[in-house]
Image 1 (tube, rainbow, N blue to C red):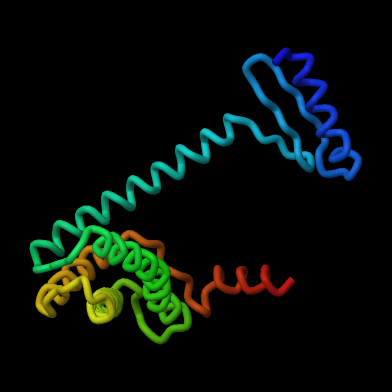
Image 2 (image 1 turned 30 degrees about the horizontal axis):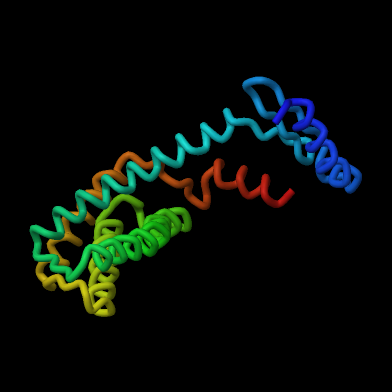
Length: 191
């Protein structure tokens, strides 16, 4: 197909759309396709950036899952099929990520209102152990194709809780209710 024919076909297809105000322009050059939609440009460069970032996140999640698999396997994880194992880890990550955000926020909130003195103490450790133990125990109970001993779950929960406790030691401390910083934040949200 000749470039002039391609341009004619594109103008016939795009003209009715551009009258509705949805499609602004279509420019085809030798090496670059530029499509503007609602005043936002969609380029191959942005698409590459998106795929690179997504790939990095997926590689990190897969490597964490792989090490968790090896560790759980040493602790007695048994499975019937690879599909059941993958489903187990997908469910584990799906539930663990938002629940860990909540369990990490609880001590910070309690510290901010003055109920506890430090958001980095034993409470974080106990909450992380409880979360991991409960989550893996529930997944083990409801998934017939996956089996792990209670001792294995407990040891995994202890090590996982210890690692997250050590990693949270570098977190920024939340402001107290009576602090100047908290009052500034409160005034900022009230205006």
